Length: 141
Image 1 (cartoon, rainbow, N blue to C red):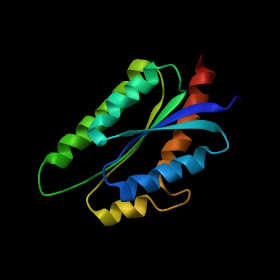
Image 2 (cartoon, helix red, strand yellow; image 1 turned 90 degrees about the vertical axis):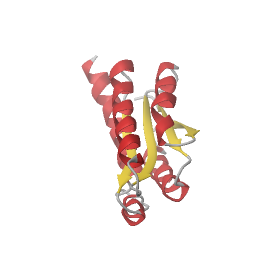
Image 3 (cartoon, rainbow, N blue to C red; image 1 turned 30 degrees about the vertical axis):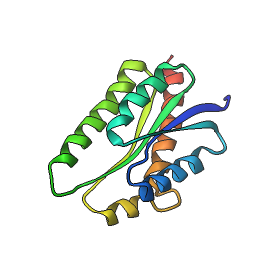
Image 4 (tube, helix red, strand yellow; image 1 turned 30 degrees about the horizontal axis):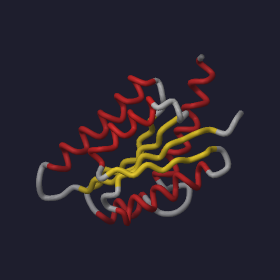
């Protein structure tokens, strides 16, 4: 199989977490893909940037990376809902796999635990899912 072309669309918000998720995704892809990193301001902006990346025709898959941590207001629920629905919709509308590497946690500690280096990193998981989905979809065509 030819080297895959994968975009990582990553939020700059919560960089202590998202940088670790990005590193995990890059680790998972380093032998199989040409990776382009696209930064957006926050998780809310991930779906639109992912859709434009998918529509560009330049990528076989998109890995969405971000981190939304529950606070004292309802903001967490609104952002988590919009991001998860938006990411799913992009894949359905474009036929390009968009995998979910956006943490939605109650605490900073939970986010740190899910972004540890190695194969348990959720960015790593999302990147491996992207590769798998490209293979699945190619097999169905």
